[in-house]
Image 1 (tube, rainbow, N blue to C red):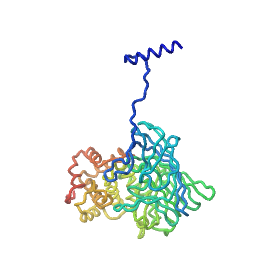
Image 2: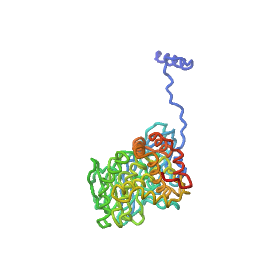
Image 3: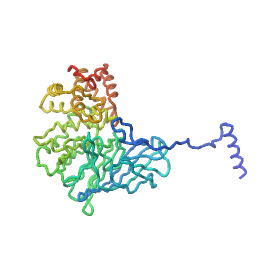
Image 4: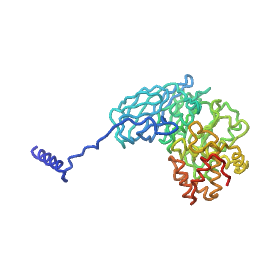
Length: 466
């Protein structure tokens, strides 16, 4: 007792004198806990995503009953605080939250429009890894925009489709909904027996109980939230392997057997061709889903398993659209955009992939596609930074594809394909900007290309075809 007192006094004196030899001051650094921001700062979509943390994984368990279109869900989200957080947000449209815990302890929650605001029982210091569990339910809504249409969760005659770009995930689970926060996913969907529940990645099998079937899927490679999908209904599902990886395709049972099935059957072949152009296929599974719904008049590159509207297969297999969406597995999915103003990095390369595949498959040569698109291009519309309402415009897709071809003709085939393979290898599983692509193109080709890209991406007059 006397000895302990003397040691304490000695240590106190040492601390006061700032001398070495005692380790009495072990206090944590001063923390300044503040709310995370309600957006990641995207110029086009300021409220998309949230700040203050980085998600590592989502584990989603959903039950969907087509009788009343109701979803009952549980989301387990593992993340790391990137600042000292007093509270943080997740994106969630509609749906009623019943329970929220952070690291197993009940947390406060409130709603602010499409924001779910979570307040843990204690601040989360920067660098802290934490787990959020959220119970929720309701009839999912769609996100309607005057310039971008409807995205999100669509009920169908026999099920549902969760799909859309640039935002859709927040209509069916709580999420940090911006491509900058990519994560791995485990998705379980329970539906009435007889229905399929299709999603991204590797199939984990099915289990049955009490008239319900649970379908399991997982994707370990990072995925942007808008690329997550669930498709529920009556489908002709075909499962196999390709290059040692699962290949799962599905076609709505309401569609006649024919063009859509034939196009899906060529998925592996088309992916293999694109790998010769862009480098190794970047994911752990292959596939595709063809839906039969008049509201889905587009295709989307949902990771590992693109979703196609049936409108593409009315007069034949239309494998060009399959090439486009599979090209996105490299350009857009594996290498994702930093902000939506850079979307030409997705769509310009996917458009060019259509032309490469068409030529390879015995159709129109690349040069013929280039010349026809060049003649009809409105050069007053920029490709880079096109504006929010123009992210799906011909300036992004077609002029973007023309830019890719012009680069090829400017630097030559050898340098061009080395640029593409270097880009997909160095930026794999990450995010990238137009400026970073220009830097890679200059480094690999050994040429100054900034004026070239300024002219082709942003100039308001037609540059000469190289």
